[in-house]
Image (cartoon, rainbow, N blue to C red):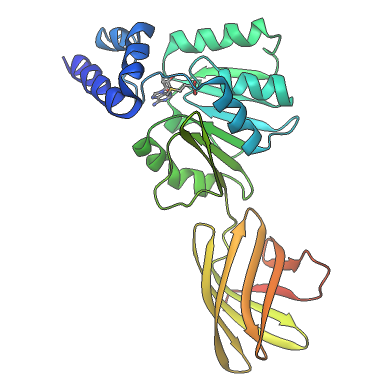
Length: 277
Ligand SMILES: C[S@@+](CC[C@H](N)C(=O)[O-])C[C@H]1O[C@@H](n2cnc3c(N)ncnc32)[C@H](O)[C@@H]1O
């Protein structure tokens, strides 16, 4: 009974989010029937395929390169991961709770001669280890993205790219959005965590920075010769950009963070060191 209720509510969610065509695809695919009969575990997202041009846009936005590791959450028939391996030489793992789709994905990869490069696992995406991904791909639902968000931010290395077909991640502003066949495709680049106190040395001055961070956006205060100044900035992976006035002149500091140090990437001579006091 609980399975039938879950399948019915999933059908309603499918109509509301993917439209009637989504429901037709979901039912014809048999997922609803398999779930109602308890053959397939209850899914958090119904099976709806990404279109070919959407897959192309996702991989282009993620800037996938050869040998990079792609983790495809809710892989369906494996089309995103298979395209990443076939068109970009990537490797990776795709996970799905539906065993029929996992079998289909394996068969599709084998048919393209890619079985050595991609692995498909029957697994709950909430249990998938994420830490070694270079790229994470997904076509899920807004609430599923939001449930995943804390793990994406905590477990993925700075610079890891996340691409999502159609659904965003709330107030985590995407780094890029493209519209493909009328629907958005989102890209986020996992930002390094630079919150806290830094000592920045520039032009013989020592400047204390107190940085606050909301995803990739930085705000804070610089104390320069005892005087406070407002800091704004941005983090894109390990790239950091800070702006604040020094000696009456607006300065821009562009650098990269490595451990407890931010160093310039534009040939200038400042450096910032994390303070723990
Ligand atoms: C909208 S489909 C996307 C399929 C494919 N990624 C694509 O873009 O064509 C979502 C997929 O997530 C799978 N799914 C739903 N809940 C899941 C869960 N908790 N763990 C793993 N896969 C899940 C479904 O079986 C379905 O294949």
